[in-house]
Length: 388
Image (cartoon, rainbow, N blue to C red; front, side, top):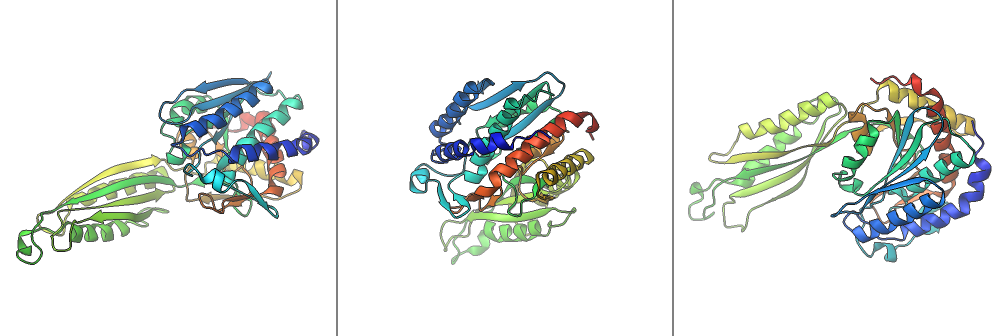
């Protein structure tokens, strides 16, 4: 294992200064100017470090960027990051990066400005050390991961499909674990059409859409566990106009999750079939939606990568474990393409998407060392990762 500790320790003050710069920019997914400001900063730094830099222009969201380092060996390896956050304009000024003991707190510090910089400094460390046992090491910087990467994945999936492995820099779990499996996520809208009438004078002439919706929500929640790991949650509801009117419209937005592609198929089919049976006469049900993130199942190749990550951590003097999680990320799309992927390789932290989002300062250097060591291991042993 290359000893990158001297380089990373010497670079740590600059990394922290860079983190403050990036966190203190408003770059919510729909704040194109802010996302582009961060992207331009990354492009300039990549050119300074003599990487091959490329950008992908996007009209609605920020631009996506790609950094490449060419080597003299075989294999292509990709790190996936994203530039956008969930926070609206003004939050960065209201809550700039601050330190509280070992915690660094700020909007997007864990999700995922620290991950962006850890990927960059790990790649720079390998470059400075002269490591070149690869054909290409790359970092993709997406623009819209927080809304499911509808644009970003169009650019990164062709790169993913040519990669031997992919590492995703979402934050580690609060206990330090990395992520080897993620549930797939689906979003559905169930809409009931009924008939309005005066609720006091002639209610019998109406068909209550809200009453039918209540039956449908109960039916939806009965789908929990229809396949192992499947969860269904009715999260947002609406309908009706006035209390004295039998409502003719009602709707619910539903979150559906599954741990395997087969479970996602079963859950999707079961949700869509609910429209065929109504409980209130003269009502009609329409359902639309799909899984926007496919499940990331723990394949043998992913399990082997996780073991290598654990071995690297032990050699660096600490322990990690791998785990499944219910949330989705770009790793789900990578897994669906059949490319081995590990996630949760960023800093230890938590409370993402909240005013208290944080990372542990003391985790940045060890996790960056781990990332570089894992890349080195993957480059050396890539032929052992047989696609499953």
